[in-house]
Image (spheres, rainbow, N blue to C red):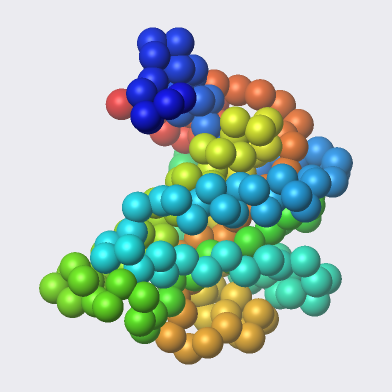
Length: 203
């Protein structure tokens, strides 16, 4: 809208968008238009960042060898995570679907360039961690934008960051912040899957 002014109808739709954003693990095999993916990445570039540093680096993961390495990393980490639970929690954890690595047509490893010169260190000299926080804002912006176009996004954190970096030949100065699975969801739910499964409740 002109001048950045938004009306009640837009605010209501924005509220719906935020509520309907879900961590998706179950994807349809339908391809995603590369032009749409490019549009979402450009929108992510509008996320706030400390000192206007824009330290996020979205790295496409499309090759079979690279994806297989990520899947193997998840499987190792998931087994280890399961061993950390016991009783009912272990039984429930074993039933959870926690990723869409084999199904999602689009995948990104999202890194923070810890040594970026953009922004000239403004703000991050005193709080270096704000570089990574900035990457998270880009992930969230991408996530909401994807939802607005009917796409689902799943954030996979049960991974070995160094394994992902090695598989993708990533510079040593970049830190893994997120691994995203992107595609059209099989189902639409306003409540989180972990809540439906009985793992946890939203406050």
